[in-house]
Image (tube, rainbow over all chains, first blue to last red; front, top):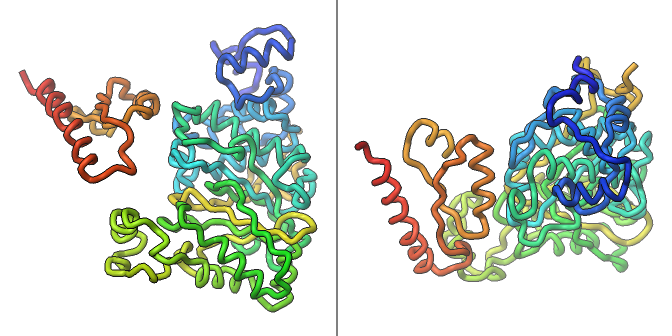
Length: 373
Length: 73
């Protein structure tokens, strides 16, 4: 296995600089190596410590990060994880997220280069979330938790520094997104009346997973009045029915984030997670007449996802936002309060889930499994 | 597109103004830094069909010229 000291002797692998926080940050800003916020200088010593939780060759690419298709090797990712403020224990999740993001069906090129304001949302499930003290409760989306913030930021820095998703060059987002700084949470499994996401997707309860979404920022669903599951679901379906979101044109499987109090009410009334999804499919619809004539004629009627079924449809025809009864993911997240959230996607993307596994292919039971001896 | 160019076919990418840097970066990424980029007026989305035809009218002669430049001597 190549070691860091040998790699550092490669021309261009590093540079000498004074150990001055202000100067290093000025240099990184000047070079465009970052997200605009101050970074932790990725010294060889810090990168070495980050790699203490990497059980694979440090120069073997985990994936190619679009749009530059830069090789995401552990050593490069470790430098970005240091810059983001990660503790070394977080590093296996950073690598796992990159692995998931580089799967073809996620469409990382589209997600990073598009004019649409989507980012890379990471949902962590399983025991590792607790081990790393990730936040799944109040303010899970931020601020305040180092693991959520730094893991998400490390991945975003990798998009910039390895993938070349640089604003105006490789990232053409019309107005960008606050979620392009960091976007990472752990599901609130303890408050989930249904099976958590990773178990629903077929992973064992003892597995830890990362699921990545090409997602917009959350749109809140405020409901302090409904006291039945049916009432809450009606409000949620109404919020999903957005005219201008990408999901109407694709089958990108958006995300419904249900707050614990809403989830308890819905489950108490006998709804399973599958029932929730079916309700959203059946009621999260907009009338064709909500769309402009140009959109109806030039896009909806001829768009492949509708399979020519809307060629003659009138303005009262209801169009589903999700395209089948299972076409939305549902998680439980957050703390006390009568709120849920809807997260639309880029549309032309599919969520990808990866389980945290050791080098020998076995499910990792702990982050300590990755600690180099 | 890059693969076609590498095989010797006459190829080009049509772009509207703000996407020039993305086009150049992608051409470098895929190993064809000299890939011709033909500019049309921005935007291409949210315009009338007549304006779309006008954009095609901007691109077509540029491509014809490109083909002529690459005719066997």
